Image (cartoon, rainbow over all chains, first blue to last red):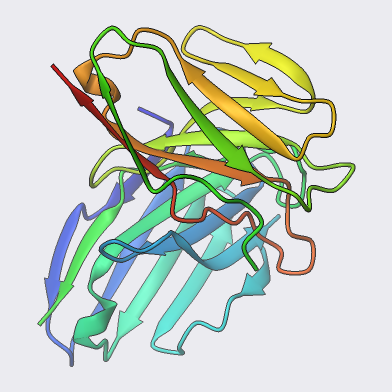
Length: 115
Length: 111
């Protein structure tokens, strides 16, 4: 248990569906992250929020829409996804983004399958 | 921009010491070196972090030479449960505002 929870753990959706992934951290951290991990590929950083402000969007398609209402919660809204978006989506948090000695705490991930 | 280079995979047997080396020739003065462990279908987990010389905790040791262009993660007496992917991260990419995880090293521990 890392103090970062994600729901749902598994999600199957069609290409026309709209769904949301939720992440919550109980560590008092100020930075939260969304990563995508496809099969046999390195982790890809998608979004960074630092003190509720989005500081990075690594060229992520607009069909992925993040939301950070407060420092403890992070959402990833999904709509009109493609089968190639099927992957493990990981949420992480850290004390503050940008610190070289920062340690990221990861949630268990949401396994997403797009049909 | 790949900042680190690690072996793709390594094999070991239970009870052996395993050393995984990471090259980071372009490490910056302020960069720390951090290692994470990831089991299948789980998020990575922090193992150890260091800046120079040697760091040891309850699960691993991290050796960093004086030039800091490489580092070695040492896992003493591995068990089957240490089978995982190990990632070496260096610093924070200020230009890209991220940590770069790379492909990691897949460690396979055999009985």
